[in-house]
Amino acid sequence: MFFLANWKMNPSSLKEGEEILKRLKKFLLKKPKNVIIFPPFLYLFPLIKKFKDFFNFGAQDVFYEKKGPFTGEISPLMLKNMGVNFVIVGHSERRRYFKEDDEILFKKMKACQELKIKVVFCVGENKKERKENKVFEVLKKQTRFFSQKVFPGFLAYEPVWAIGTGTPCQPKDAKKVFSFLKKRFKKTKILYGGSVNSKNAKSYLEAGFDGLLVGGASLKPEEFSKIVSLN
Ligand code: PGA
Image (cartoon, rainbow, N blue to C red; front, side, top):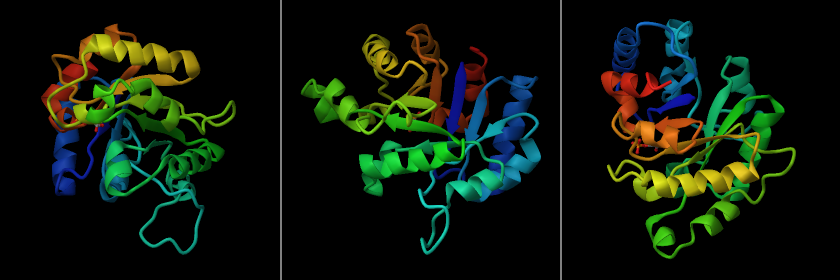
């Protein structure tokens, strides 16, 4: 099982980030298997330095070019050279606020794959699409550029309406999506994300998911340690 912590644009200082990991370490007692922390870029390297013996780390985003005039961006090559081997691509917040489309996201995935950086590719429908029974149609569209050669190591099903809302997808509905994705992408680990907490986490693992992508609850050390302990 894989447990991924997406901190998003939190917390507000490196010190608080260190505190979260210190406390998480205490709750876990021993080195957990397959836990990957995705802090903001600014904290990534100090945290790797301090906690690399205990946790794996990844980046929340990346650009697709190797280098050049792309102000503000971080390249896959830079990540690789800094020892980062995981990256989230296509989170719904990137799609929504930064207008990243399927084509751009595929380019990002391809660029990472060339450097053997494992991609956590996020997909999921919004509220309207679910109401209109378009879930599978949306997922097909979001993965349409994937090929035999270029596909992600992790595919996270994150229904947009379930992210940060406290309204998770019912495990029986998530299970249908899991089967749909697993059938198409046999070699990919399929994760669930969207309002995961220590009470509902188990039900997604029982539904077959290979792990969880956790947002809000991953910033609470005790809560996240309970989720990770399901391993
Ligand atoms: P959430 O976020 O757990 O706070 O709903 C999940 C995510 O966006 O990855």
